Image (cartoon, rainbow, N blue to C red; front, side):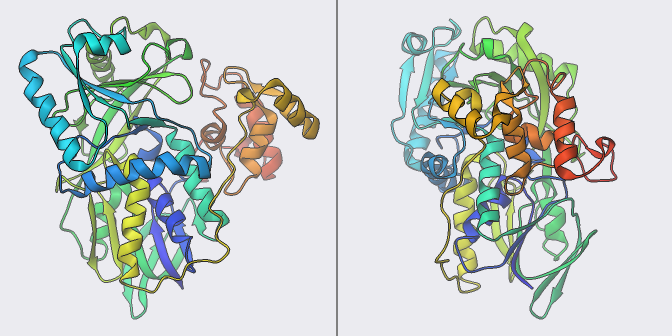
Length: 468
Protein backbone atom coordinates (compact mmCIF):
# COMPACT_ATOMS: atom_id res chain seq x y z
CA UNK A 1 0.00 0.00 0.00
CA UNK A 2 1.47 3.32 -1.11
CA UNK A 3 0.55 6.65 0.39
CA UNK A 4 0.35 8.30 -3.03
CA UNK A 5 0.34 6.95 -6.56
CA UNK A 6 1.06 9.59 -9.19
CA UNK A 7 -0.25 8.82 -12.68
CA UNK A 8 1.92 10.51 -15.30
CA UNK A 9 5.67 11.02 -15.57
CA UNK A 10 5.71 14.43 -17.24
CA UNK A 11 6.95 17.60 -15.60
CA UNK A 12 3.85 17.95 -13.40
CA UNK A 13 3.95 14.37 -12.13
CA UNK A 14 7.71 14.43 -11.57
CA UNK A 15 7.55 17.79 -9.79
CA UNK A 16 4.80 16.38 -7.56
CA UNK A 17 6.95 13.33 -6.80
CA UNK A 18 9.89 15.56 -5.89
CA UNK A 19 7.71 17.69 -3.62
CA UNK A 20 6.17 14.68 -1.85
CA UNK A 21 9.57 13.03 -1.43
CA UNK A 22 10.36 15.71 1.16
CA UNK A 23 7.99 13.88 3.51
CA UNK A 24 7.72 10.47 5.15
CA UNK A 25 5.52 9.11 2.39
CA UNK A 26 5.66 6.10 0.10
CA UNK A 27 5.25 7.47 -3.42
CA UNK A 28 5.01 5.67 -6.75
CA UNK A 29 4.95 7.30 -10.20
CA UNK A 30 3.26 5.26 -12.93
CA UNK A 31 4.09 6.23 -16.53
CA UNK A 32 2.88 4.40 -19.62
CA UNK A 33 5.96 5.27 -21.72
CA UNK A 34 9.46 3.87 -21.35
CA UNK A 35 10.82 7.03 -19.71
CA UNK A 36 9.71 10.18 -17.98
CA UNK A 37 9.26 13.30 -20.15
CA UNK A 38 7.85 11.41 -23.15
CA UNK A 39 4.72 13.49 -23.77
CA UNK A 40 3.92 17.21 -23.68
CA UNK A 41 6.91 17.86 -21.43
CA UNK A 42 9.37 16.93 -24.16
CA UNK A 43 7.85 19.02 -26.97
CA UNK A 44 7.07 22.59 -25.95
CA UNK A 45 8.45 26.11 -26.15
CA UNK A 46 10.72 25.67 -23.08
CA UNK A 47 9.72 29.10 -21.78
CA UNK A 48 9.65 30.14 -18.12
CA UNK A 49 6.78 32.58 -18.50
CA UNK A 50 6.71 35.79 -16.47
CA UNK A 51 2.95 35.56 -15.82
CA UNK A 52 1.45 38.55 -17.63
CA UNK A 53 -0.94 36.58 -19.85
CA UNK A 54 -3.04 34.63 -17.33
CA UNK A 55 -6.30 36.13 -16.10
CA UNK A 56 -5.91 37.62 -12.61
CA UNK A 57 -7.43 35.46 -9.91
CA UNK A 58 -6.99 32.20 -11.80
CA UNK A 59 -4.82 29.28 -10.76
CA UNK A 60 -2.81 29.87 -13.93
CA UNK A 61 -1.95 33.39 -12.79
CA UNK A 62 -1.09 32.45 -9.22
CA UNK A 63 0.91 29.34 -10.01
CA UNK A 64 2.70 30.84 -13.02
CA UNK A 65 4.20 33.67 -10.97
CA UNK A 66 5.02 31.36 -8.06
CA UNK A 67 6.55 28.76 -10.40
CA UNK A 68 8.69 31.42 -12.07
CA UNK A 69 10.04 32.46 -8.67
CA UNK A 70 10.75 28.83 -7.72
CA UNK A 71 12.58 27.96 -10.95
CA UNK A 72 14.93 30.92 -10.46
CA UNK A 73 16.18 29.07 -7.36
CA UNK A 74 15.52 25.40 -8.15
CA UNK A 75 17.80 25.28 -11.19
CA UNK A 76 20.79 25.89 -8.95
CA UNK A 77 19.89 23.16 -6.47
CA UNK A 78 18.71 20.58 -8.99
CA UNK A 79 21.33 21.39 -11.64
CA UNK A 80 19.33 21.98 -14.81
CA UNK A 81 19.82 24.55 -17.56
CA UNK A 82 17.98 27.86 -17.12
CA UNK A 83 18.61 31.36 -18.44
CA UNK A 84 16.83 34.53 -17.37
CA UNK A 85 16.82 36.14 -20.82
CA UNK A 86 13.64 38.24 -20.62
CA UNK A 87 10.80 38.43 -23.14
CA UNK A 88 9.11 40.91 -25.45
CA UNK A 89 5.51 40.89 -26.68
CA UNK A 90 5.23 42.71 -30.01
CA UNK A 91 2.42 44.69 -31.54
CA UNK A 92 2.53 45.83 -35.15
CA UNK A 93 -0.26 48.39 -35.16
CA UNK A 94 -0.49 51.54 -33.03
CA UNK A 95 -4.18 50.76 -32.59
CA UNK A 96 -3.12 47.66 -30.61
CA UNK A 97 -1.32 49.69 -27.94
CA UNK A 98 -4.34 49.55 -25.57
CA UNK A 99 -4.22 45.74 -25.79
CA UNK A 100 -0.54 45.81 -24.83
CA UNK A 101 -1.33 48.15 -21.94
CA UNK A 102 -4.07 45.77 -20.78
CA UNK A 103 -1.53 42.93 -20.86
CA UNK A 104 0.87 45.00 -18.75
CA UNK A 105 -1.87 45.85 -16.24
CA UNK A 106 -2.90 42.21 -16.07
CA UNK A 107 0.68 41.17 -15.37
CA UNK A 108 1.10 43.79 -12.66
CA UNK A 109 -2.12 42.59 -11.01
CA UNK A 110 -0.68 39.06 -11.10
CA UNK A 111 2.46 40.29 -9.32
CA UNK A 112 4.89 40.29 -12.26
CA UNK A 113 7.75 42.68 -11.57
CA UNK A 114 9.50 45.05 -13.95
CA UNK A 115 7.03 45.15 -16.85
CA UNK A 116 7.70 48.00 -19.27
CA UNK A 117 6.24 49.16 -22.58
CA UNK A 118 8.88 50.01 -25.18
CA UNK A 119 8.51 51.90 -28.43
CA UNK A 120 9.47 50.06 -31.59
CA UNK A 121 12.74 52.00 -31.68
CA UNK A 122 13.58 51.08 -28.08
CA UNK A 123 12.75 47.44 -28.75
CA UNK A 124 15.01 47.38 -31.83
CA UNK A 125 17.85 48.93 -29.81
CA UNK A 126 17.74 45.78 -27.67
CA UNK A 127 16.90 43.42 -30.53
CA UNK A 128 18.22 44.82 -33.85
CA UNK A 129 16.67 42.00 -35.94
CA UNK A 130 13.11 42.86 -34.94
CA UNK A 131 10.80 43.73 -37.81
CA UNK A 132 10.58 47.39 -38.81
CA UNK A 133 6.81 46.92 -38.49
CA UNK A 134 7.02 46.61 -34.69
CA UNK A 135 5.38 49.69 -33.17
CA UNK A 136 5.48 48.78 -29.46
CA UNK A 137 6.64 45.92 -27.24
CA UNK A 138 5.91 44.80 -23.71
CA UNK A 139 9.18 43.90 -21.98
CA UNK A 140 9.13 41.26 -19.21
CA UNK A 141 12.51 40.91 -17.47
CA UNK A 142 11.58 37.89 -15.31
CA UNK A 143 10.84 35.62 -18.28
CA UNK A 144 13.38 32.91 -19.04
CA UNK A 145 14.20 29.77 -20.96
CA UNK A 146 14.86 26.30 -19.64
CA UNK A 147 15.71 22.83 -20.89
CA UNK A 148 12.40 21.00 -20.35
CA UNK A 149 14.05 17.57 -20.49
CA UNK A 150 16.63 18.50 -17.88
CA UNK A 151 14.05 20.09 -15.58
CA UNK A 152 11.70 17.10 -15.72
CA UNK A 153 14.57 14.67 -15.23
CA UNK A 154 15.90 16.77 -12.35
CA UNK A 155 12.57 16.49 -10.53
CA UNK A 156 12.36 12.76 -11.28
CA UNK A 157 15.90 11.95 -10.17
CA UNK A 158 15.55 14.06 -7.03
CA UNK A 159 12.34 12.20 -6.17
CA UNK A 160 13.97 8.84 -6.94
CA UNK A 161 16.99 9.57 -4.76
CA UNK A 162 14.62 10.49 -1.94
CA UNK A 163 12.76 7.19 -2.13
CA UNK A 164 10.03 7.60 -4.74
CA UNK A 165 9.45 4.58 -6.99
CA UNK A 166 8.95 4.81 -10.74
CA UNK A 167 7.04 2.19 -12.72
CA UNK A 168 7.77 2.98 -16.37
CA UNK A 169 6.20 1.26 -19.37
CA UNK A 170 3.12 0.73 -17.23
CA UNK A 171 -0.32 1.86 -18.40
CA UNK A 172 -3.28 2.50 -16.09
CA UNK A 173 -6.38 0.68 -17.29
CA UNK A 174 -8.78 1.14 -14.36
CA UNK A 175 -9.06 2.64 -10.87
CA UNK A 176 -11.16 0.96 -8.18
CA UNK A 177 -12.28 2.31 -4.81
CA UNK A 178 -11.28 0.31 -1.73
CA UNK A 179 -11.90 0.76 2.00
CA UNK A 180 -8.40 2.15 2.44
CA UNK A 181 -8.14 4.18 -0.76
CA UNK A 182 -7.72 3.00 -4.35
CA UNK A 183 -6.58 0.11 -6.47
CA UNK A 184 -4.80 1.39 -9.55
CA UNK A 185 -5.06 -1.36 -12.14
CA UNK A 186 -2.40 -1.43 -14.87
CA UNK A 187 -1.17 -3.72 -17.61
CA UNK A 188 1.69 -4.65 -15.24
CA UNK A 189 -0.33 -5.40 -12.12
CA UNK A 190 -2.32 -3.60 -9.44
CA UNK A 191 -1.06 -0.89 -7.10
CA UNK A 192 -2.90 0.01 -3.89
CA UNK A 193 -2.70 3.54 -2.55
CA UNK A 194 -4.30 5.81 0.01
CA UNK A 195 -4.34 8.69 -2.49
CA UNK A 196 -3.96 9.22 -6.24
CA UNK A 197 -2.56 12.21 -8.12
CA UNK A 198 -3.84 12.40 -11.70
CA UNK A 199 -1.09 14.12 -13.73
CA UNK A 200 -1.80 12.30 -16.98
CA UNK A 201 -1.60 15.18 -19.46
CA UNK A 202 -3.85 14.78 -22.50
CA UNK A 203 -5.30 11.63 -20.88
CA UNK A 204 -6.18 13.30 -17.56
CA UNK A 205 -9.90 13.38 -18.44
CA UNK A 206 -9.87 9.62 -19.10
CA UNK A 207 -8.12 8.92 -15.80
CA UNK A 208 -10.51 11.18 -13.86
CA UNK A 209 -13.49 9.46 -15.44
CA UNK A 210 -12.22 6.14 -14.03
CA UNK A 211 -13.31 7.32 -10.55
CA UNK A 212 -16.57 8.79 -11.83
CA UNK A 213 -15.30 12.37 -12.04
CA UNK A 214 -16.06 13.26 -15.65
CA UNK A 215 -16.86 16.96 -15.34
CA UNK A 216 -14.19 18.14 -17.77
CA UNK A 217 -12.76 17.28 -21.16
CA UNK A 218 -9.18 17.58 -22.37
CA UNK A 219 -8.64 18.60 -26.00
CA UNK A 220 -5.17 18.06 -27.50
CA UNK A 221 -3.91 21.28 -29.08
CA UNK A 222 -1.29 20.53 -31.70
CA UNK A 223 1.67 22.87 -32.02
CA UNK A 224 4.35 22.57 -34.71
CA UNK A 225 7.88 23.93 -34.30
CA UNK A 226 11.10 24.40 -36.24
CA UNK A 227 14.49 24.14 -34.53
CA UNK A 228 17.36 25.98 -36.19
CA UNK A 229 21.08 25.29 -36.02
CA UNK A 230 23.28 26.98 -33.42
CA UNK A 231 24.60 29.26 -36.15
CA UNK A 232 21.20 30.97 -35.95
CA UNK A 233 21.02 30.97 -32.17
CA UNK A 234 22.25 34.52 -31.69
CA UNK A 235 19.72 36.27 -33.93
CA UNK A 236 17.71 37.24 -30.84
CA UNK A 237 18.61 37.28 -27.16
CA UNK A 238 15.10 37.60 -25.73
CA UNK A 239 12.04 35.43 -26.22
CA UNK A 240 9.94 37.22 -28.83
CA UNK A 241 6.14 36.83 -28.61
CA UNK A 242 3.31 38.37 -30.60
CA UNK A 243 0.15 39.68 -28.96
CA UNK A 244 -1.73 36.58 -27.75
CA UNK A 245 -5.04 35.37 -29.12
CA UNK A 246 -7.69 33.02 -27.72
CA UNK A 247 -5.65 30.11 -29.14
CA UNK A 248 -2.56 30.97 -27.13
CA UNK A 249 0.57 33.08 -27.22
CA UNK A 250 1.09 32.64 -30.95
CA UNK A 251 4.27 32.02 -32.91
CA UNK A 252 7.35 32.87 -30.86
CA UNK A 253 11.01 33.18 -31.74
CA UNK A 254 13.43 32.33 -28.97
CA UNK A 255 16.96 31.24 -28.31
CA UNK A 256 17.29 27.95 -26.44
CA UNK A 257 19.48 27.37 -23.41
CA UNK A 258 21.75 25.25 -25.62
CA UNK A 259 22.28 27.92 -28.26
CA UNK A 260 19.78 26.99 -30.99
CA UNK A 261 16.86 29.07 -32.24
CA UNK A 262 13.28 27.83 -31.83
CA UNK A 263 10.32 29.10 -33.88
CA UNK A 264 6.71 28.08 -33.25
CA UNK A 265 4.19 26.78 -32.30
CA UNK A 266 1.05 26.65 -34.37
CA UNK A 267 -2.21 26.00 -32.53
CA UNK A 268 -4.73 23.48 -33.84
CA UNK A 269 -7.29 21.63 -31.75
CA UNK A 270 -7.45 17.96 -32.74
CA UNK A 271 -9.17 14.76 -31.58
CA UNK A 272 -6.27 12.31 -31.73
CA UNK A 273 -4.29 12.34 -28.47
CA UNK A 274 -1.32 10.70 -30.21
CA UNK A 275 -1.09 12.79 -33.39
CA UNK A 276 2.35 14.41 -33.31
CA UNK A 277 2.97 14.51 -37.06
CA UNK A 278 4.26 17.71 -38.62
CA UNK A 279 2.54 19.07 -41.72
CA UNK A 280 3.65 21.20 -44.64
CA UNK A 281 0.86 23.69 -43.91
CA UNK A 282 1.78 23.95 -40.24
CA UNK A 283 5.47 24.50 -40.92
CA UNK A 284 4.64 27.07 -43.59
CA UNK A 285 2.65 28.97 -40.95
CA UNK A 286 5.62 28.82 -38.58
CA UNK A 287 7.89 30.32 -41.25
CA UNK A 288 5.44 33.04 -42.27
CA UNK A 289 4.40 34.19 -38.80
CA UNK A 290 7.88 33.90 -37.31
CA UNK A 291 9.17 36.19 -40.05
CA UNK A 292 6.65 38.85 -39.03
CA UNK A 293 8.51 39.29 -35.75
CA UNK A 294 12.14 38.86 -36.75
CA UNK A 295 13.63 39.81 -40.08
CA UNK A 296 15.87 37.44 -42.00
CA UNK A 297 15.17 34.25 -40.08
CA UNK A 298 17.47 31.69 -41.79
CA UNK A 299 15.04 28.83 -42.36
CA UNK A 300 17.71 27.18 -44.52
CA UNK A 301 19.36 26.28 -41.21
CA UNK A 302 16.46 24.21 -39.84
CA UNK A 303 17.86 20.98 -38.39
CA UNK A 304 14.57 19.42 -37.29
CA UNK A 305 10.85 20.05 -36.94
CA UNK A 306 8.59 18.56 -34.29
CA UNK A 307 5.09 18.69 -32.84
CA UNK A 308 3.88 18.93 -29.27
CA UNK A 309 0.39 18.42 -27.84
CA UNK A 310 -0.95 20.77 -25.18
CA UNK A 311 -3.58 19.45 -22.79
CA UNK A 312 -6.31 22.09 -23.05
CA UNK A 313 -9.14 21.86 -20.53
CA UNK A 314 -12.62 23.23 -21.13
CA UNK A 315 -12.59 25.37 -17.96
CA UNK A 316 -10.05 27.94 -19.29
CA UNK A 317 -7.94 27.38 -16.17
CA UNK A 318 -5.84 24.67 -14.61
CA UNK A 319 -8.07 21.97 -13.10
CA UNK A 320 -6.52 21.21 -9.73
CA UNK A 321 -9.10 19.71 -7.40
CA UNK A 322 -10.19 16.72 -5.31
CA UNK A 323 -13.44 15.58 -6.96
CA UNK A 324 -13.48 12.37 -4.93
CA UNK A 325 -11.90 11.94 -1.51
CA UNK A 326 -8.24 11.03 -1.89
CA UNK A 327 -8.20 11.53 -5.68
CA UNK A 328 -6.52 14.72 -6.85
CA UNK A 329 -6.56 16.12 -10.39
CA UNK A 330 -3.84 18.19 -12.01
CA UNK A 331 -5.48 18.48 -15.41
CA UNK A 332 -5.64 20.97 -18.27
CA UNK A 333 -2.02 21.88 -17.56
CA UNK A 334 -1.36 23.76 -20.79
CA UNK A 335 0.88 26.83 -21.04
CA UNK A 336 2.19 28.05 -18.61
CA UNK A 337 2.28 24.50 -17.26
CA UNK A 338 6.04 24.02 -17.54
CA UNK A 339 6.67 27.20 -15.56
CA UNK A 340 3.96 26.36 -13.04
CA UNK A 341 5.00 22.74 -12.41
CA UNK A 342 6.86 23.22 -9.10
CA UNK A 343 4.11 25.53 -7.85
CA UNK A 344 1.42 23.04 -8.89
CA UNK A 345 3.31 20.38 -6.92
CA UNK A 346 3.44 22.67 -3.89
CA UNK A 347 -0.28 23.43 -4.20
CA UNK A 348 -1.19 19.74 -4.46
CA UNK A 349 0.97 18.93 -1.46
CA UNK A 350 -0.99 21.54 0.51
CA UNK A 351 -4.23 19.87 -0.60
CA UNK A 352 -2.88 16.46 0.39
CA UNK A 353 -1.95 17.75 3.85
CA UNK A 354 -5.65 18.24 4.56
CA UNK A 355 -6.25 14.60 3.66
CA UNK A 356 -3.33 12.95 5.49
CA UNK A 357 -0.65 13.95 7.96
CA UNK A 358 2.68 14.88 6.39
CA UNK A 359 5.87 14.50 8.39
CA UNK A 360 9.03 16.13 6.98
CA UNK A 361 11.81 13.69 6.11
CA UNK A 362 14.91 14.18 8.27
CA UNK A 363 17.34 12.90 5.64
CA UNK A 364 15.81 14.62 2.60
CA UNK A 365 18.35 15.55 -0.11
CA UNK A 366 17.54 18.93 -1.62
CA UNK A 367 20.27 18.91 -4.26
CA UNK A 368 20.98 16.83 -7.35
CA UNK A 369 23.94 16.56 -9.69
CA UNK A 370 23.07 16.57 -13.37
CA UNK A 371 24.98 14.97 -16.23
CA UNK A 372 28.33 16.70 -16.68
CA UNK A 373 28.38 18.67 -19.94
CA UNK A 374 31.95 18.12 -21.10
CA UNK A 375 31.86 20.81 -23.82
CA UNK A 376 31.00 23.48 -21.24
CA UNK A 377 34.03 22.75 -19.03
CA UNK A 378 37.33 24.59 -19.13
CA UNK A 379 40.30 22.80 -20.71
CA UNK A 380 41.74 22.21 -17.24
CA UNK A 381 38.46 20.72 -16.00
CA UNK A 382 38.20 18.53 -19.10
CA UNK A 383 41.74 17.19 -18.62
CA UNK A 384 41.07 16.44 -14.95
CA UNK A 385 37.85 14.61 -15.83
CA UNK A 386 39.58 12.53 -18.53
CA UNK A 387 42.33 11.62 -16.07
CA UNK A 388 39.70 10.46 -13.57
CA UNK A 389 37.59 8.63 -16.18
CA UNK A 390 39.20 8.16 -19.62
CA UNK A 391 35.82 7.63 -21.31
CA UNK A 392 35.35 11.40 -21.20
CA UNK A 393 38.13 11.65 -23.75
CA UNK A 394 36.14 9.76 -26.41
CA UNK A 395 33.81 11.98 -28.46
CA UNK A 396 30.70 10.09 -29.57
CA UNK A 397 28.42 12.92 -30.80
CA UNK A 398 30.52 15.33 -32.84
CA UNK A 399 27.73 17.85 -33.45
CA UNK A 400 27.20 18.50 -29.74
CA UNK A 401 30.63 17.33 -28.49
CA UNK A 402 29.11 14.63 -26.27
CA UNK A 403 31.53 12.11 -24.82
CA UNK A 404 31.29 8.43 -24.02
CA UNK A 405 31.59 9.39 -20.34
CA UNK A 406 28.44 11.49 -20.53
CA UNK A 407 26.50 8.70 -22.23
CA UNK A 408 27.65 6.18 -19.62
CA UNK A 409 26.62 8.60 -16.89
CA UNK A 410 23.18 8.96 -18.51
CA UNK A 411 22.72 5.18 -18.50
CA UNK A 412 24.18 4.47 -15.06
CA UNK A 413 22.73 7.38 -13.07
CA UNK A 414 19.57 7.18 -10.92
CA UNK A 415 16.58 6.47 -13.16
CA UNK A 416 19.02 6.08 -16.04
CA UNK A 417 18.37 6.00 -19.78
CA UNK A 418 17.30 2.75 -21.41
CA UNK A 419 16.66 4.01 -24.98
CA UNK A 420 18.33 6.19 -27.60
CA UNK A 421 15.88 8.99 -26.89
CA UNK A 422 16.54 8.59 -23.17
CA UNK A 423 20.25 9.17 -23.76
CA UNK A 424 19.47 12.07 -26.09
CA UNK A 425 17.33 13.89 -23.53
CA UNK A 426 19.93 13.45 -20.80
CA UNK A 427 23.02 14.35 -22.81
CA UNK A 428 21.91 15.95 -26.15
CA UNK A 429 23.68 13.19 -28.10
CA UNK A 430 21.79 13.18 -31.39
CA UNK A 431 20.32 16.68 -31.12
CA UNK A 432 22.79 18.41 -33.42
CA UNK A 433 22.97 19.01 -37.15
CA UNK A 434 23.11 15.38 -38.21
CA UNK A 435 20.23 14.42 -35.88
CA UNK A 436 21.91 11.23 -34.59
CA UNK A 437 23.15 10.13 -38.01
CA UNK A 438 26.69 9.44 -36.80
CA UNK A 439 26.46 8.87 -33.03
CA UNK A 440 23.60 6.35 -32.90
CA UNK A 441 25.68 3.20 -33.58
CA UNK A 442 28.09 3.87 -30.71
CA UNK A 443 25.26 4.91 -28.39
CA UNK A 444 23.43 1.67 -29.23
CA UNK A 445 26.57 -0.32 -28.41
CA UNK A 446 26.92 1.40 -25.03
CA UNK A 447 23.26 0.82 -24.19
CA UNK A 448 23.57 -2.83 -25.20
CA UNK A 449 26.65 -3.34 -23.03
CA UNK A 450 25.30 -1.58 -19.96
CA UNK A 451 21.75 -2.97 -20.12
CA UNK A 452 22.95 -6.51 -20.87
CA UNK A 453 20.82 -6.93 -23.98
CA UNK A 454 21.42 -7.57 -27.65
CA UNK A 455 21.92 -4.69 -30.07
CA UNK A 456 18.62 -5.56 -31.73
CA UNK A 457 16.82 -5.10 -28.42
CA UNK A 458 17.93 -1.49 -27.97
CA UNK A 459 15.05 0.79 -28.86
CA UNK A 460 14.75 4.38 -29.96
CA UNK A 461 11.84 4.85 -27.56
CA UNK A 462 8.60 3.16 -26.54
CA UNK A 463 7.72 0.22 -24.39
CA UNK A 464 9.32 -3.15 -24.95
CA UNK A 465 7.45 -5.17 -27.53
CA UNK A 466 5.94 -2.10 -29.20
CA UNK A 467 6.89 -0.43 -32.42
CA UNK A 468 9.01 2.72 -32.20
